[in-house]
Image (cartoon, rainbow, N blue to C red; front, top):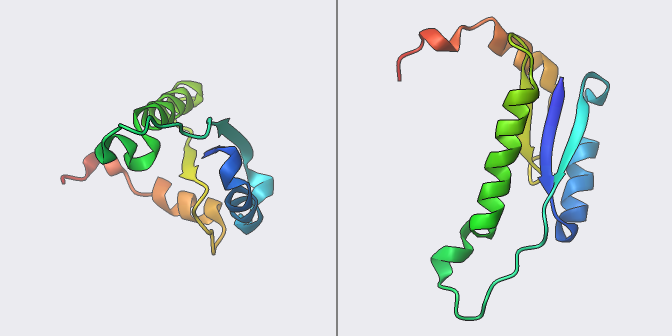
Length: 107
């Protein structure tokens, strides 16, 4: 199963903590989606900087779409930021989720 994560050079420590916290790495193909450290014009309004700015959100969305396109029907992938600490094996959580048909759920 592919596990996609995004990181920029300023988050190297977080990236290493994230990777080290994954209990069942052997079950995943870890795929980093590198992003450039956001650069902002001094005059840029604060709302333009939220979450790293538009380019960062566009990169995340592109990464998710690529993950969807690269995943065979019936398979799963994981997409995560690096500011996550994993306390339990991820595969057991995804196995439990696969037994529940989310398409039948009404929100």
